Image 1 (cartoon, rainbow, N blue to C red):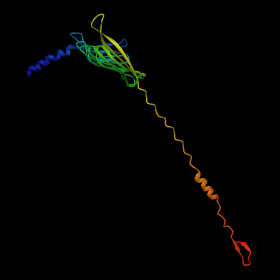
Image 2: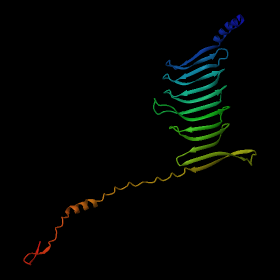
Image 3: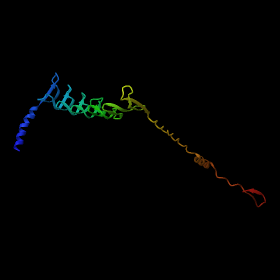
Image 4: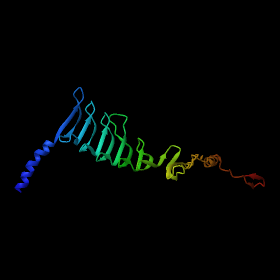
Length: 235
């Protein structure tokens, strides 16, 4: 245990001495760049941050032995994030994202492109979005070569792909681009429902009632009778 403590006490000064803080400034004095330098190698180590003249960050990321490592981010002058890239030993490796920059300083960044790097080249699926967040393109890369691109346009969908064909001139194979277009299916016509016309109420009942009112009670017909004198008279 005592030996371990002595080893740690010896190691701590070496670690502290191995790195020194580094800064760069603009001519007017504002901070431009800050990070750490390995005193023995003179290479970047740890977290580095760069700044615009207005004091906002322009980028940040980690370094190991002078090489980019992990996620590195870039910002515009208003502080909006517009790219993130992933590195391994200084080479692009892993997911990346690019953003639509907002129109106003207080707006929010929206994803523009999302994909993946492998050994420094785009590889696998890549998606492109409009500013409203809708997918406009679906792409597939193989070691930096665009193999398929499905583009959603206003009039329909375009399918672009690369087909491997034999190269009769130089031998081997070459890629030939194939484009296919498919219009959107027609939208079903909306059935227009005519507004129902109000049915006029029949005035038959009213006319009947009026006619009923106009009728008079029939008078009894006069009857003929013979009086005591033998004369016929009306009664």
